[in-house]
Length: 393
Image (tube, rainbow, N blue to C red):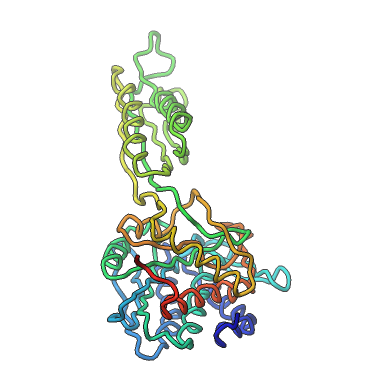
């Protein structure tokens, strides 16, 4: 088949993309670095705000930097959301701050794949799509947020609002290493378990102390066994602290943080019920108090019917630009696609470039895949605008 010219020539910009990505990734925008987030948002605004006729606004988010929203043709009959985040896990004091080429195609750097490479793929997609013949038939909205890596607590309301006025979401999180995109994601949550006991001298006989560390350890060991009974549930014990500087004291305090993940929405109450039951067992013992605080901040991303319908068209677009048609998979990591699914907006996730070793100083992206993945998205949008793909019926 013959591709629209703007889509066909997109790979010619690969060197340009490498240079832009290096510049963006050497702006530190760790989730807690407000000045860096502001600087990164300004860099994005200069690029995404260049579309003629686009409405650009910065939106305050509670507890973090502002988000960036760009709207084009909001009155169009078909409206699509393109989403990504510009925060990273690398804070201002992290030693990993610079980019370097590992070879002719792989760029190593903070956020090159997760997800500044995805933001660049999004930009390239829109620049390409706007040059296709039927672009005026699609309205699009870009939502770039500053707090995805820490749970999207400040930006979450923006996703609920977007879901009410748009028809489809595209999430530019990185693709799997083999090029697959994401069909579903686990829901995520966190919990703090705090145990209080009774202090006493460790050498007292008989000892009326109540060891909070041992009681909490018993709870944690039992909690990590829950997934054996609830397939699709994950419980990870993270930080733990307790006791005092003196080891001859029976500790009256211990606390731990747990990471919780579920595959189906129905798993949520089952898991919380099991954790509360384990806490109740400890609380039945004289001298102990174990409390749980926290819950789920992202529900699972479960595959919606429209996503099932559109995925074959996505595979066809990939094949028509010369790529192997991707599969789609379930993954344990969450994204803002979880929030959109919960709000009822169908979305295709993990459509960004290919990279690996996210959240480490080994993170890299395969730069030519920025253009390749943008070709797929632009062709999909072109066919949607041309009426070859329907979002209903």
